[in-house]
Image 1 (cartoon, rainbow, N blue to C red):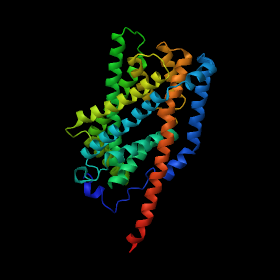
Image 2: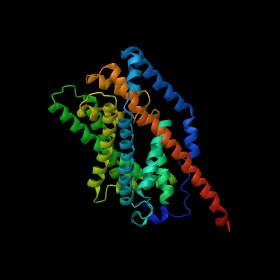
Image 3: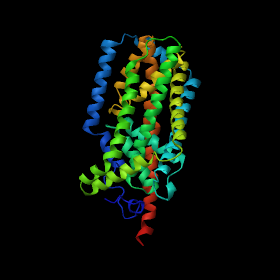
Image 4: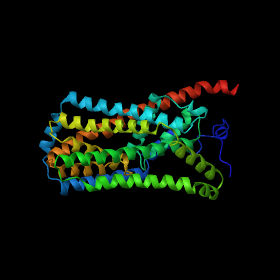
Length: 360
């Protein structure tokens, strides 16, 4: 079986938008019944935890939130959004390694553009069901690089693999840090989850590499071609010499997220070990993989419980999680939503203004 050549994949005659998660599709998913059901389930779980598990005083929680130091809070916001640049640079290296757009990745957009696409993808994950934002990112990269959707989506999967590897390294570092400090409350589920996610992703890559040809022959027509391109985009993302640099960029991105959580705690004058901060921030990231919009319900309940396990009071834990989620979730919905609307408005205007000349 002959694999699709780059020239076939990137031909102008290929309809790269067919079946892709367009902006209209995203709007439909946001208002879909599964998304609403997921939100209700998350709200029920969170409500039950607040009612029956956590023991807190609303007045004290509200007092903690009101007394947040604005300068330190804004520093946490700045550090969080700085992480998108490092993620965008890493994704650009991955996409160029995978030869997205042909010409050794010459058509891959710049770091700023890719950082914006990542933010819009996170916005989609924050408002829609089943992490639609990851598929949206593949679609947007395909559009910008004039590539095919499956190959571009493969780079998103490759980035996820690197993300989980970085998380595992940092989780183990946090566990060692806490052990040195003499804290015996290291949550085994976080370490296990990190190992399990990395193991599952690596196993998937091995199956794709070993059994991919046979599977593609069993898939009908265009599905087989799409899988070939997806497999090529994923596996070729790991063929470059700058994998260590990509991993370092990913770790820097996560360290900036950890710094966000630290400065949120500092802004609330909550004294907390950096090892605990590392665990909490990384647990937050893993809980967002649960396919409710932004991990709603699971992140708040799980992270609050984790902080209480590490000795924070219920009031402190709930206050800290509430303020941190204004950055890691609500601000992404706000800023990512604005960027999403402006981005697609500009693209639509550009397409309209160029369409008459293309018909001549």
